Amino acid sequence: MQPCRDDARASFNHLLVALLPLEAAKTKELVHDPDDRVNRCIELVKAEASEAAALIAECAPYGRPMLAQAQTKLGHLEALKILGEAAYCQAQATSVLKDN
Image (cartoon, rainbow, N blue to C red):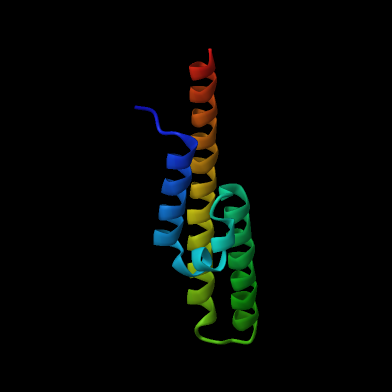
């Protein structure tokens, strides 16, 4: 059985909540649009990274761990973005095959 777009979207949202719960909570209104949701999460994490860089510039001891965490989050989001695109392409191909 091939997953449909709804299955892919549900899986994407599940992974987003598991990996980035705070950002997922802040983007709940985009639950039906994975592309916009991941892009909004990227914006949120980039803001966090910017704040961390400012803390590092001020020699705050917790700036570096905060920046490392933001970089990890960005890696997770990039992976989710790629998986989301692949799932969408697969769902589109399956849909075309069913229509023919």
